[in-house]
Amino acid sequence: MTAPEGASRHPASWRDPSGFIFRREGSLLRQIQPVWLEEWTAFRESALAKRLVLGGKLLPWQDAPLSDAFDASAAAVIRPDVVPFISYPYEWTFGQLRDAALLTLDVQTTALGMGWTLKDATAYNVQFQGIRPVLIDHLSFQRLAPDSAWVAYQQFCEHFLAPLALMSRRDVRMGRMLRDQLNGIPLDLAASLLPGRTKLKLGLGAHVHLHARSQRGHAGDARKPTEVKISLTRLTALVESLRGTIKGLTWDPAGTEWADYADKDHASYQGSAADAKEAIVRQLLTEAGPGAGRMCWDLGANTGRFSRIAADLGYRVVSFDIDPAAAERHYRALGAADRTDTTPLVMDLADPSPGLGWAGAERSSFVERANADVIVGLALVHHLAIGRNVPLPMVMDLFADLAPQAIIEWVPRGDPMVDVLLASREDVFTDYTVEGFEAAVGTRFEVRSRTPIEGSTRVLYHLVRR
Amino acid sequence: MLPHVFAYLDLATGSMVVQAAIAGIVVVPVLARNKIRALFGRHKSTDETTLTSEVDATTDATLVVAPVDAPGSDRS
Image (cartoon, rainbow over all chains, first blue to last red):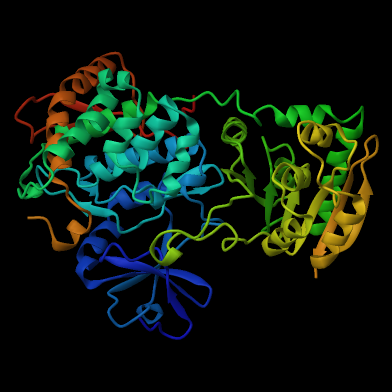
């Protein structure tokens, strides 16, 4: 397909024939096709649209002129608000996926009450602005036909209910299965992985186990699905039942390797060293700023102690951590503090999200989404270099690919946290010296400043990409 | 009949059939719960949606839909 000059279709926007997202000269736009114009016009003028946007549940948009269209087939064009960072369900914490599920059900309930329905319920239709989930697909709404079933019911169960059930009832790390199952977790697979006792639970028994059994029983059934009729009352009750089931799924973020790591690492500082480190980080972020309107990625953020400093300086912050419990605790703390300037995500920096889906381009890789003005990597390098055997120059290559500026903490040998990493293994890390670190830094960065952390042997580097 | 573009998802028959069955089962406890809550004055807010089930032959009860939660709330 040849794109018009200066425009490109979004690689993930091709399933729904009613329209698609495209980029033109840096702006993200949505083209609406003639087949959906009547439905779109009714929706954009509806009380439902106004209510969802005012309630912060649907991404606001502006109408755009047809001259901005991707091609001549357009019936209308809109310009949705910008989401600062696109994240994916396999990067969300348990709580984020749960809140995204509840948002979808809230929207469906409201829509049903006003004569509309969601025609799809994929988790990829939700994005996070800070910690607030918002629906981003403006073409998901269709006027409700009398007695019609919810066509997105299966999709909701596969994208939200099945992974949440597995994370809650089996192991939270099963959320990562969504990275391999972009269309959601098949219900027969979820049913086979869930504990047998979940068959006795009304919600999971019905929406996962019975649902999976029905799919098997009707495989090859030629009956037209549209012949299935459900009254509005029953349909609303179905959504209520899903909501109750989702709310019943909980997870306690404790007991994982990193859940209490921040406290331990912080405790490894003597006396005023912890305060000194915070002061230096604040100073370096200020020098890297101004923060307002700029993006900071906190790599290995744990529960967000230093993300908060960046956020306080006005940065929009995306905080990555390998540990689902640490990221979950961060997410909950932000919610408790009513802070919407930071988005915590689960990410293994030694195996970050790759490009996935059709042509490997439908879901962008971690590196492709790099939009930070500055990255912060505190108490991180030793975990990558020693804990994961990543050579220091490769660590610096990744950092340089992510942002033009970096604030990195060097943790030398002899530090208690490095000793812990080396305690149970052969020390083959001959290059893990300050000379080796600075040589690696020098391949991609210039050192703007080196600041020893008083009361410790650690040093904070402010780096500027060459 | 659903519009052509409505069917871009796979309308799996098994899911549709079980959806109707589950909806038929859960409607009774959901209605009962909401009736009780309405009786005790819970779930009164500006975001409340009340549906009069004129289309449902099963019951003429009023179905009170739970208020929309603030995103990020109710994390346990």
